[in-house]
Length: 73
Image 1 (spheres, rainbow, N blue to C red):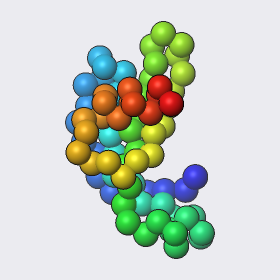
Image 2: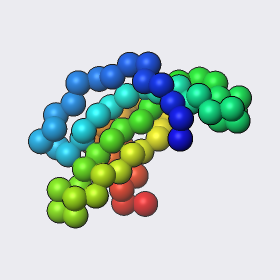
Image 3: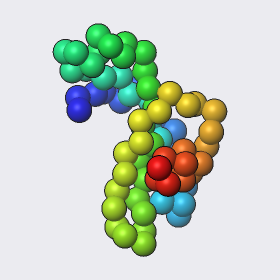
Image 4: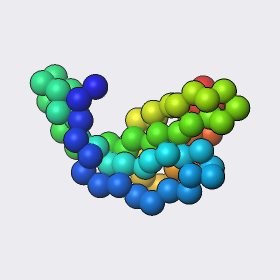
């Protein structure tokens, strides 16, 4: 996935959230289909040491809520 970071919000690393960023996709097809910025929340599950990247258009929920909702799917 090719993208550029447009903005980044402060996060509380104790929750497992590594970053909360607004990104713009830059790949040929993806930037055509998704021209608007989208949100990417990066989360590390400390129990399993797995790092997840969640892509969403939800800008209302706090990053830990996004992580919990998507991780359970």
